[in-house]
Length: 80
Length: 414
Image 1 (tube, one colour):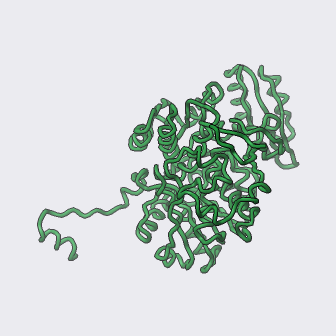
Image 2 (tube, one colour):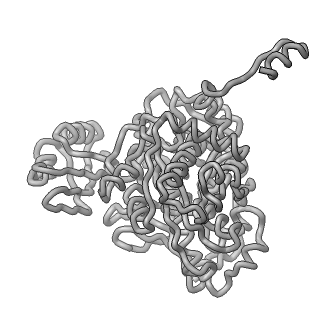
Image 3 (tube, each protein chain N blue to C red):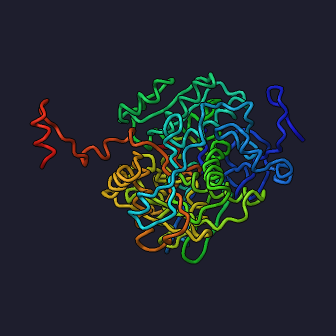
């Protein structure tokens, strides 16, 4: 089992969509929210996904395809 | 409560603290708050430090970054030290005349042992790696960090593994491989990133900018400390900083404010200016658009040392730029080489592409009046141009003559 810490950012009409619920329903991933902030124009959620790595990859790809910004919370590791 | 490391008493009380929920952790190789996933930051007992620290004590210290060890998570006696820090701060009269600035200074960090500011952060990270009894130190890099990690790993006697993308220029690979093990990864930027994330979880390695990150990043504060000390213990009116992950930017601000907290300087009214290239400007774009968080980008810039599309400290950098009344500047890719040449031709300093971004930003700040003519301004030059000659080689004119005086005269009498 793998764990990935990510941040989902969204705006506009996507604010009203229950993305975290849909992630848990569509994919075999455990979602674990740690921080979040939602206003009437934008929102973000910091959460952990736990599952087999391939399932996490599929879940993240779906989220991106749905128009949500997905970033690894630690940022990029490769530095100049 | 003090600790003993290698028989030496560490007279500092250091903890880690989450920048988001403020939860406090012991000094361990961890970097993310296990409760809210916020980044961890080294915190010091300033009341204790203030009892002993002074300008004279610092000035009497070694001629390297460890003179500031009261404000670092390590001690000079235990430091892995190859001489990083105390690089020149040069009054840039020629460049200043060109830009209409009468109090312009260049902090030339390409004078570090492996020719970039990364020696500062890696010196601290390697020192902590030994303290935490790691046997292997590692990083993923496309340039300066690779050389700095390999060199300090060699000095520390640690096994060193530096991951680089397969298509990295040979000069940069050799520049790191000479000190130790370099592993070329057949994959793009994202794939190397992913591999290192997984290895960071699996192996008991000191990854300098992953599990050592809270300590590693503290080394950047010494740039601020030196600038202040070299300016006669005063903070400048402006600092122009190249921004990649945002770590350097945030730590310079932290360093300035620590000096104020400890009453080593009277105050901090420094405006912090972000400099990013057009092909990778998530922090600058967020500031200019009035956003609080950067939107990640896929980097496409010749300034490879600034090519971080998902900056870990982006949010905090945006906050500091706004709080300090600084600005953000996005430099056209075509202007980067111009900035490099301008600094070289006026001050005799050959900087890397990140420095070209800084100088071009500085030029724009001066032209727009955002930096006043007589205001004390420091531009940070974080690495040498010898590592990125491909960025300027096509714009350099080289004369060729026959081996006789006539040929020379013909060329130079024109």
